[in-house]
Image (cartoon, rainbow, N blue to C red):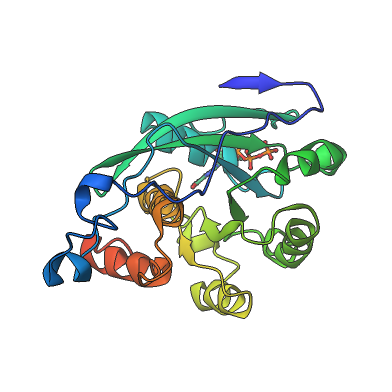
Length: 244
Ligand SMILES: Nc1nc2c(ncn2[C@@H]2O[C@H](COP(=O)(O)OP(=O)(O)OP(=O)(O)O)[C@@H](O)[C@H]2O)c(=O)[nH]1
């Protein structure tokens, strides 16, 4: 992972411009058949786009572990010292047969780094907000994290709430329905994850990548991608949550 000590956020390259209409498509050429008029060509996704995604939440909730599990497919217990400042990992996710580039920033949860990490929120396209299901204060602090996000991030940033360490059910302090209720209150998607077993880790990042990809090619007349529905359908398919 690349580490940034500097306070200056790197501007991510990102545009949401609609793709140009292909003049050969019959669109606007005056040669439209009725059928062509009804089915405009699907907008193409620019695979060079880089979507800045930031992991936030209290110190020790498992941000670094979640990223390592997603990036390398492994969990190294107790191996990470608290993150200092901020660093990023580039990761490509294939969704709907296109490659979506995520630049995933792992932030320090400790209070003393807060002013550094705030500076990065402004350019964020997605924020994964974590709490630890065995740690009540990390859950109670989610409201404060959300106010910070609303203060410093763009209004249309994609936010997802994750209850991590779902493998530690015997030490659970926050019920799953409490997480669901909080997420509903703020209208953000939610799932429980485990950086240890890997449960839902891929799904969390894939759902974010899908949402970002759909936003980038969204035609105003098309129905919006429903991230909540996608997550629910995938959770059921994978049978991921049977042990919760
Ligand atoms: N059992 C279990 N332990 C986890 C999980 N995720 C993280 N941990 C452990 O929790 C501790 C903290 O994990 P980190 O990934 O360093 O947490 P962090 O949020 O990055 O912490 P900061 O860098 O201080 O903000 C480590 O000992 C991890 O091994 C998980 O899903 N299950």
